[in-house]
Image 1 (cartoon, rainbow, N blue to C red):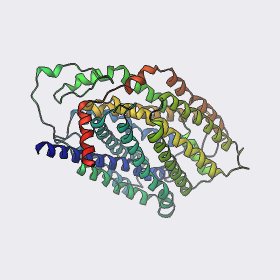
Image 2 (image 1 turned 180 degrees about the horizontal axis):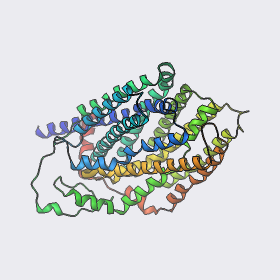
Image 3 (image 1 turned 90 degrees about the vertical axis):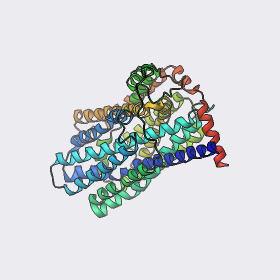
Image 4 (image 1 turned 30 degrees about the vertical axis):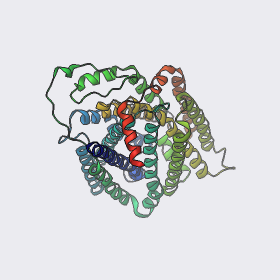
Length: 470
């Protein structure tokens, strides 16, 4: 009887934590409702130019570079005895207060607006780190089955991306209409209110309070992190030693380098935004429609990956993604050179190329996201996964810096886009470099992770859930 009650408690905890995690996933999608509003706010109200906007977008990514710090806070400094719950409450209050101050201080200096946006992004990035830690914890309950990289882990990760994309669909369709009809402020009010998803997630999360243990000699036991070995260490383990061994693990180093290289591909974001709005005449409603179709594309790609592609070789997926993007960039070049105007409208071509680009970019992210989950040890799940996300955003910032440098060098401004086609051609060639790096990696790196076996506790939990479903 006691065993039956214990099994039911495990299932209830698993379900509650899944709901909490998916709420964070949904929030991380729906929060983009403010993206276009913020761009127009700095472009029109604060009168920033193309290069300055690029610098601001770089600056707003700094909080995402601090994700390893957030991970260390979660793993080393529990708040009120909990690693995640009360940090979620803290993120909620930081977010809603920052949006409120941002709204009431619209007439203040540019510096003040930037500070508010930085705190908003700190809240969002910290929340996603907590969500990632919950995801890894749930994944470790299932870990890898006898399938190639673990079907259950793949399903959970795919579900996260689908829920996030569904969350993004709603604001993608509405934000252009809201900006045109009610200006930016209504968008900013909504952005503050939707942070209650964080609050609800914290309430639902079922987390055991951390108990303090007396130090023993076993604390200094050295742990080696390898994908072939189950890394579950007891809670008394010296985490400093764990981190040292973690960052020395060759597979972790390869994975972090791989993520950085894949994400460091520039995509001409800021110059294209000004080109689309100032030259092509696209309005907020058009941009929202484009975002909407982008999310549809992403959802379709994730469903295909979840059901068909997750067993495919990592290199095969990367090769397909990079070659496809190479073709898309030439379509963008043809748009800028006005070669296609006789055959297709500018809005249709922008929608088509942007949707394909976002869908393919998501397809390229899915395999390494799965590897990151696989390589994250349970006791340092927040730190390890946040390191992978840090590498991702570091690559994004490097890509944005390339955009910024090329924009300045070729003198692309608000209305001078004579050299934009040259920038697109240069970046298209640069985007082939990650493909060369990926193909050069040893196959052993990917095959070792696939052969990681299912541990007994995982088998037991899966069996319990099957019984519960029956």
